Amino acid sequence: MTKGSCGVQKKSCHVEWVFAPDDVARIRFAFSPIWELVASLRTLRDPARRSLHLPWVRAVRPRLAGLDLSELFALVPTAGYLVDFVTPTPDTPVPDFAAELDRVRRTPPERAAAEAGWVSGADPRIVERFRADPEAGVARVADTLQRYWEVAFAEFWPRVHGLLEGEVTRRSRQLAAGGARELFSDLHPNVSWRGDRLAVVRRWEYSAPLGGDGLVLVPTAFWWPDTAVMVEPYQPMLVYPATGVGTLWTEGPPPAPGALAALIGRTRAQILTALADPSTTSALARRMELTPGAISQHLTVLSDGGLVTRRRMGREVLYRRTPVGDSLVCAA
Image (cartoon, rainbow, N blue to C red; front, top):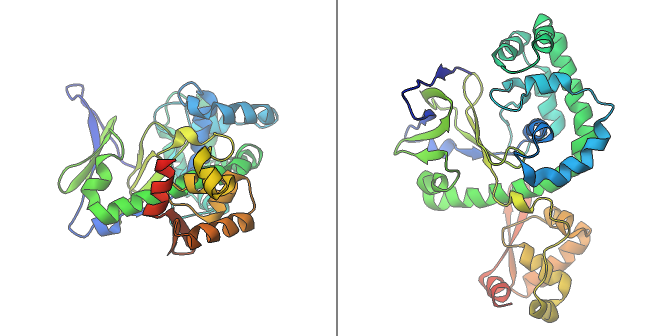
């Protein structure tokens, strides 16, 4: 990553990507379990800043007594720059944690040492230990991320996954229907589309053409309410808060309107209500706390009744309400 300082005479600095005519077609969405894991380190240390995640903080803090996170905390401080090598740009739309962690382990030691040197506000002794032997440091960091994932995050990932999956589906439709201007119009207040370029407010200055690499848009739950960017030598990436983060720790299925429940049954009414945004069978099953088989049976009935429709996107089948289904939920 290259950075330039923001002059005091400026009100703000920007990271700016210049789009060639065909670069919009190279925009892709992905979400990243390792990004959420690393972002959660800041949530642990500064829960007031990300108070939406207090239920998660209360659940996991007792589990962490025997886990030494000091090196991770030094490399991922509560504010400012964090080492980029622990959050590589996703190289597939839905990467799994093991594959991302393997990419962290393969970080060139010289790159890891350089990035550690850019971190400010950390314990200098920890940082210097890392930089003295970055190959061993990268291995330690990866091992600690693995243990932290197992202890504090793995069981919660399906819930986070469901939220991010819905966000990617919604934004992909928005891009297909209205292009870059509509997509970026409400992505985040710090993000603006300026004709042929995308600007993101940051504390440092950067401007470059995408150069055929494409831009990866990564919705996040744990980095809420902020944005983040990655630039060279990594593939360009913009991290932005997913819609609906406030509902992430809401327990159980959504309430079913009484009249609708009386008409089609409470569980089916809850499923139809939950389909305000398209969703997969597995995501619905997690939210409704039912088996995928049971959800599939209810979806078949709703589909046969003309209340939901299905569409295949890659390996996934997405269900969404039809206009008739929308009318029923809104009327109820």
